[in-house]
Length: 231
Image (tube, rainbow, N blue to C red):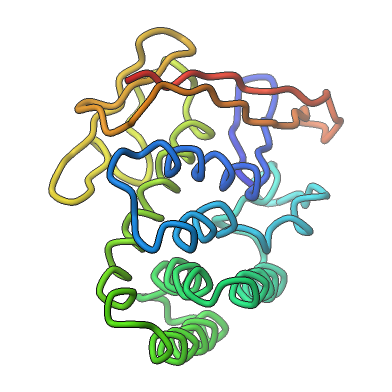
């Protein structure tokens, strides 16, 4: 769950829905990754394991808000993430390796025993999958992983920041860097975003579904965040 707090309400974005938006960025990126289909599949489905968890709101009593993907209980989060990676790998082993890299990289510095076990198991998965790759696939792996992270960050930026706002984009303060170029997000208006310099092959629209609840955990309804990315 991506949790975005507003003064009078809390916006909740599903992780998988956010990943679909990451895929929209990847699809329009001018310099395509290779292998294309496997890389796109990984980006679109990298948060597949969150679909079941996000069906219900799990309330964090200590912080008086829903648990987000950052602080979600590990005994629920880690098995769900592993199941999601398993599903992706069964469909496309190369995509599964990219998703495994994505989750393991978050935990590189963790000393929590359960996270260490998760990280080590995923690194073993990566070694196994890399052995089956061609030289070309293996050679592009790190770049495609960085591309997944880039598209993930762009989508998170839209979900976590008020459209048209001046907040720095998480998780890349000051812009989004990829292949030696730093892309700055610029709001043309309250619903239109561009990156400077422009990396996209075409302009496109985005619709991001979200739910809203109040501080008493009462549902206020569902809506779409409608945006346009220009080039």
